[in-house]
Image (cartoon, rainbow, N blue to C red; front, top):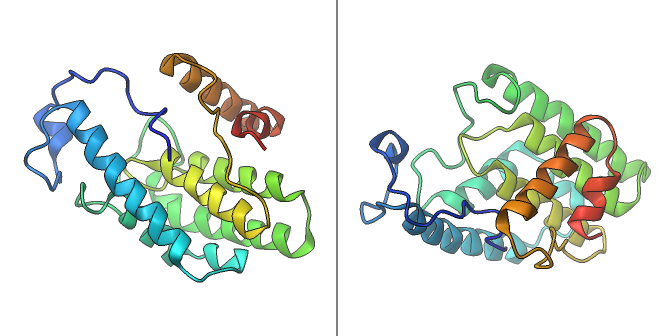
Length: 198
């Protein structure tokens, strides 16, 4: 996993309200948080790839989605692996998360079984739906990107590049990602497939 989507300002102190449920007391600045999260994400990614779940449908389970998030962030945040219980400026109303996630999982199972879309489009649509639902308090984009990578691998492809390193400015890379997500919100998945590097 790349840290290209991390916030670029390393010197920002974390305010007390941002440190609620932070499990490691040594984390006081954004750069500390980025480092701790990145280390945890690498461990979570390794765990996910070691699991012997070759069948793509094995990923399509609420329990797996929660466990993956906990494996990615559980050494840093107390809320890792639990659905959010407040509304955010992005995502659906918090109380709709379980029902919408179930619908998404059913849709993706159907796409896989009936090969409704090419493998890269299935994985990217899975990514987009997870981001749109925004099930967790934080880490949704990173979680969704790993879910897409796991899906494309199980469908016989290689992990996505997610913009690679061709853009030197983190702000530009993130802006391109958000633009592609907005296009997908408007039912145009093409820019997100291109951005992912399929």
